[in-house]
Length: 85
Image (cartoon, rainbow, N blue to C red; front, side, top):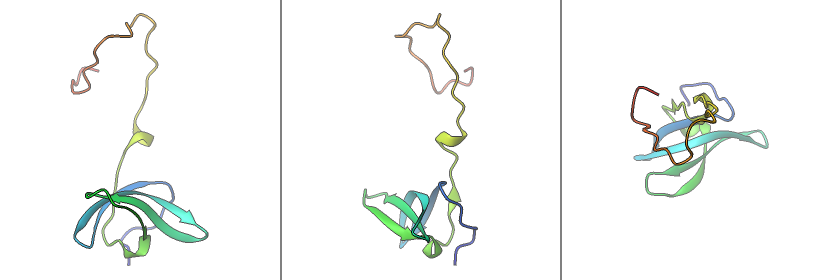
């Protein structure tokens, strides 16, 4: 049984049958599923109750996007690794 309570539309990572997966939870006709892709590139649906230790990922939903200033040049190189942004 799953360690965590099911929530819709969240991204999780987990191991299943000795393979790493990343997927998004979904409720399809009352069934709790995870639409996911394995590290080998195999796309599948796994019942949420079969996943033993999902880890919630903070992806795009948690990112904050800022509108660029009109003074910023379109061809400016942005350094996404810098902590000064």
